[in-house]
Image (cartoon, rainbow, N blue to C red):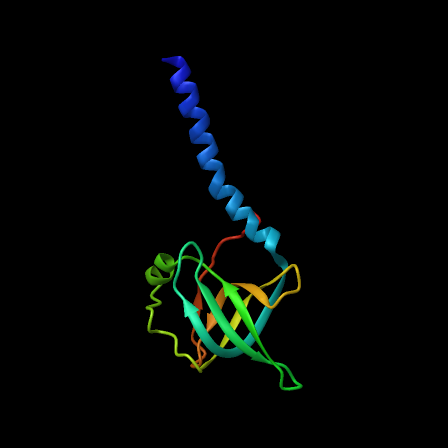
Length: 130
């Protein structure tokens, strides 16, 4: 019936809006206009969904170590880009190119990872502001 079609159409529109809202949440959480580059020792890498997390121990000039947490794409996307679960070595130095959290916490969005051998892997090609 027409009523059932209308209900299904509204539900479809609402479901389609969920990824868009989540997508825009990145731009709300991270300052995409202020790129950062941070190096540190890999503490751990979480291959999880919906967003994988890379934890880097970053040493300040005064010697204090702060763990930064960088969010990136999901585990499946990382695998499709060639990053296996065992590709990153805990204790090795990596550099993250990305965007810092707007709230000033030691968090960021990982766009490019630079490996100890200086090889770079891009995880995010898009513009979260789209």
